[in-house]
Length: 477
Ligand SMILES: Nc1nc2c(ncn2[C@@H]2O[C@H](COP(=O)(O)OP(=O)(O)OP(=O)(O)O)[C@@H](O)[C@H]2O)c(=O)[nH]1
Ligand SMILES: [Mg+2]
Image (tube, rainbow, N blue to C red; front, side):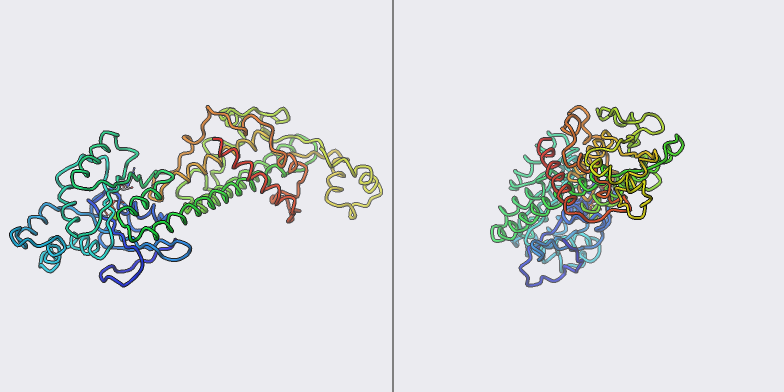
């Protein structure tokens, strides 16, 4: 989706479905624009009345072509005074219909003075096919709302009430809104919290609009399909990013001489590399969902890499997540790293390699040969502990959950805690690590953190298989 501000003043001949976002001031109209366009930088949002002063338009695309044009408008402030003024301009006995009454107002001097903002709103609605009437659902239903609805209904277009703040409003308040709107003849409405929208919030909104705008039902259906497809694609890409992270982390090996100081240094280097790799994954996920470091400041500042609630390598962080710390995991200063003995696959060529090493053929030895030679000389290898891999998966999955439930109007930092459900055990808590992760353990060059990393078909297959297995876990959550 792209945005392209433009003036709404003249109605252009176009196949676009034009929707005006209208309502009382400070109810979240601009916030709704941000969430529907997935653009956190659209317009200005602030917790005070009168923030938006001008009409601003954005197009929504389906299959790459514009299908809907949304117009953000200034908030209505004094509809009661405007209705009185309208009665003066066009007394009821004249029996003008709504749009004629609005025209008379727009041609009056006060439409450029006292009611300049209101004039911008109704002028925009007149040129649109329908209005989304945004309500702060925490508010009681007041006379001002009814006046606004009378004024907006006079423009002669369908209105779909959008109950914003629906996550924070009590159920009884939502019911009161439904009842009052029904009495005004508005029976279709939608609950849509712009900060924490339901997963199917947008599709519900477009479905409701399709009921009101029969002639645009196909357009809305195309938009709906496009949204679903994009959502699925984003989700697949996200799991793939996590799978890449896990393969990189599982395959990583650090070699060092067998003395305590060197081991500690190598452990630090291993931790640093994994933390940076995790941060890169977080950044990529944020970007994929159109969010930024601003949304998750605690993690994405490089120097604060150790603070994602708790250090990735802190045994307490692992225990808090209900993870067993593995036998191989070295405690204390080296927590999170496993001292590794050479494992499956690597012993095959041992005899040959030892021969090569003994014969001084260092230059001729391949990467495996170098590692074997290191081993012969007593060098050690460190890998990331299983428990850390499990924690990485659980935290990244929690982040994907948080991102998928976050509206682009949200301004509070992301909190992972509600998504790190520590009571419920997943296969990543209890089961053996998937085979492809075990395989990655014996393939150091699969890690993009290894200088000898190179493209490999088998690695690509492993990433795909792991992403698939993550999806199965996701489906069971
Ligand atoms: N918690 C929560 N806050 C919201 C929601 N929608 C909007 N806000 C906040 O409400 C305030 C007003 O939001 P805006 O989007 O600027 O409201 P507006 O209707 O465009 O305001 P005007 O342009 O002044 O008429 C901001 O502080 C938003 O962050 C919501 O669904 N939940
Ligand atoms: Mg606004």
